[in-house]
Image (cartoon, rainbow, N blue to C red):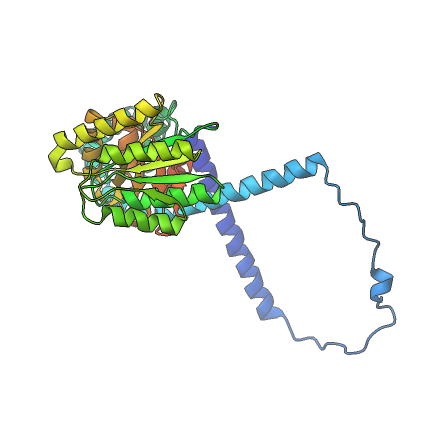
Length: 394
């Protein structure tokens, strides 16, 4: 089943549940209107059975079959999957509303599917932060698709737009790996980069907490030695997550802090090392030289590390996040993105642009302010959460 078919299935299921709920409510209201109070008998009848008579022998066999264990595991997995889907649906509420408002505006003066309409589609998609190249491509494909389907009604045309967006999103993500590159039998080194204010240090703290909860030995490295307060901020997150932080003095060499952290991680047989770095993009040359030096230090200790270079971008900044990603991608080997504040923005469509234009996988997504609200990014949950509520009944 394709991704758009899954979205349609979820859409139809929701509509059926709504109708069932409406019917049940109507039935309850009718019963309340027609029912009369019935006197309750306070007399006990002889036919009532005592607990002794009705109790059955309880089996003391506590053995659980393999089938039952598998069934229980599947139920837990389905519950977790449903919970994750709900989290995405809730987190993308603002983005979905903005997208819906733009679609309503597009079709408010709908007269016919002509060239002016396709230009308005382009403007609508660009305004929804899905990216310039993506918007142009969708409009071009829509021209052909509308002719093939002979779609004339607004609902059919809107669903076709959604379908093309989803199909393109799915096509661009065929070989995408969204899971973090964790090392099962050794130290996993993740280097975090990004401009100041994007939520870099907070994301590191949340991820450290999650790994700590999983029973892993975690270390943090405060390699942002330039910004005042950056070291203290990471130390505070280390205390909250109950993990140790390796740090130096403000203004000290970031690479030396990373060297100390790598040495300590090896000595203590740590599972994960998360490295915070400076974010002075306005001084790009110096910053990139600094990041290169840090990576050389890491590779001297472990030729295969860092296992991830994670660029942290703020989803609320929309196209600015795209520009930051382009600049970092040009100058350093970014392996994936951490998209913060996705729940607090109307610009979640930027995920489509990032995948379609930069071909960088989103690895983690911030879907809330809590310490447990940093999620491993699920592209399917994201796109269902974004588009399911935008389909129209034809």
